[in-house]
Image (cartoon, rainbow, N blue to C red; front, side, top):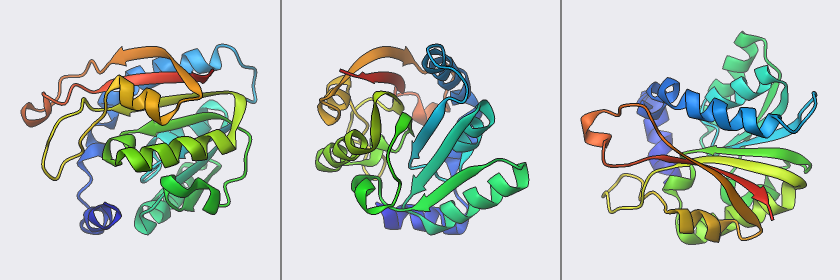
Length: 201
């Protein structure tokens, strides 16, 4: 899968970024709820599969100390460039979300976000992500993630169910669930994306 994304970034074909503004309202709603119980500075946030840093930069602008991780070197370089151009302090690390312990991320994260990266992973890889997040997250941390409904889609992401999310993060509970409200292009209308917010059990 990482090779697939390396090719897409190399040729500049990143359609998931074009939809980011559609995803923004629900993302902001859930982040508002996370921040509702916190005082500034909010603390450390980890962006899994950060790509070129779209969500990392938004979190940094809101007052989070953000680290983004992605397996694609070009995406990480582009994210660093975008942060510099925007004058935003955010750290971007090249590494796999399935091996967070090997990426020198440190610990103490109060927020973990995953906007569609979870979709692309096998059940085994999702379990590895869950274990990695457990190791780096604070006891009062929360997770916000966006996933497609589960289905066979050939080369496209298989998506995930609510049960898949719960299985990957057994030490957490789902405290919020929001449907994706924006109108999707016709080929994507069957993916039924949903947002989940989790807190440590």
